[in-house]
Each structure stands twice: as C-alpha cells, then as structure tokens.
Image (tube, rainbow, N blue to C red; front, side, top):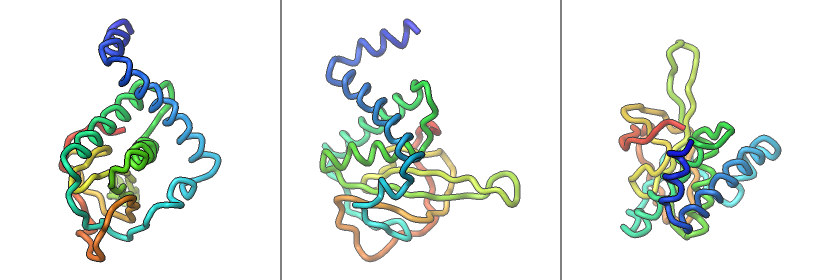
Length: 170
C-alpha cells in the first residue's frame, strides 16, 4: 500500500488529478453501461461494420493518446471495482474526443476454449496503433468499430485484426 502511495506521489499534481478523474470516469461509465446501455456511449460516433482505414495520427497526439491509455489502464487496475476492456475503452474514447484526438474502437470476438463459447474483447486505436486493450498474439474477428474525429475512407481493413501491441488485459 505504501509503495502505491509513493508511486502516486511521484506522478506530480497534474497527473494525480487526471488519474483520479479517470478513476471516477471508470465508475461513471460502468454505472451508465448498467443503467443506460451501450448505445448511450455510441450515439454521436460513426459506426463501421469493419475496421476503418484511417490516416496516421500526428506524433504529439499519438503520444498523448498512449499516455491517457496508460493512465486508464492504471486506474482500472487499482480501482476497487472491476473495469474490463469495454469500460476502459469507453472512458478513453471520451478523453481522446475531448482533446480532439481522432481514433476508433472495435468490438470483436474469438472462439474460446470450448467449441461453442466466444470470448469478446474491445480495443481502441489511434491510426494503426492500439492505445488500449491489446492482447499480445491474440486475434479477434471485428464485429463493429466506432470512430470519432477521423476521415475514414470507404475502404475497410480485414475484419480479423491481430492485437500486436503489448498491454495487460483489462
């Protein structure tokens, strides 16, 4: 516990406040998912039936998105409630949209160990970089993607997307 407090103290006041805000947003998102449903979060987003082909995100915006993605993962890990991949992605999407950083998140499935079972997952990308929700070496078939702030072309990428960047599973 003391180690966690020391790490928190080393973050600096700006990042401490942002981390606390992210923790509250995770609780809010979880409550909204339960009370209002998924459509509450996707009303103003563009729906894609496959992964949208997007332009690269400028370096400074990508760095900011990666930092926010790390903070969301940290807050989810230490929250006293469970914040799985979908909750994390929804919070991160709102943080990125507020900062006018374009991106999209995808919902996908894969076969689980049992022949009839499916494993669902959500991940968020800015350009071609997975910012939150990556599972090393796993491949999910994309069911749908939701974008904001991008000029996605009418083309689409393959519907099976390997998660190539390392991150811990939410």
